[in-house]
Image 1 (cartoon, helix red, strand yellow):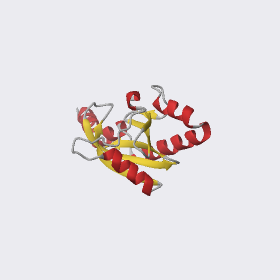
Image 2: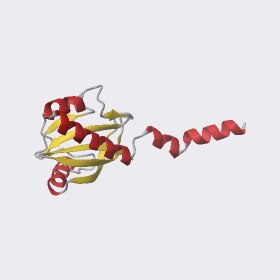
Image 3: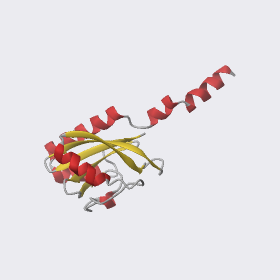
Length: 147
C-alpha cells in the first residue's frame, strides 16, 4: 500500500511533469545546435531540416523556428504552413505582438529570452511560453519551453 501511495505521489508531482516537458537548458542547447547546423549546411538544407516532420530539432514540446528580421517565417518545426508567411503583426491571446517584439529584440541583442503565450503542440492548449533566441545574420533562431 505504501508503495502505491508513493507511486501516485511521484506520478502527480511536478518533477515527473517537468521531465515530460523541455526545460530552458534544453531549449538553449537545441537553438545552438540549430545555429551550428545552419552555419555548416546552409539555409536551404537547414530550414528544410528544421521544418521536417522527422527533424532532429524536435523533442517533445521543444522545436525550432526561424524568423527573418522582417517577421517572415523561414522554418517552423511545429507547423510547416507558417513557412513563407510574414507574421510581424501576429498577436498572442493577450494581444501581445510577440513576433514584432521578437524581431526588435533580435535586432538589438545577439541572444535573448522572450515570454508570450502560444499553443503547445503536445497538449493543444494555449500556454505561457519562454522562447530562447539567437540572431544569425538577418534571422533569429528560436526554441522555447512551455511553463
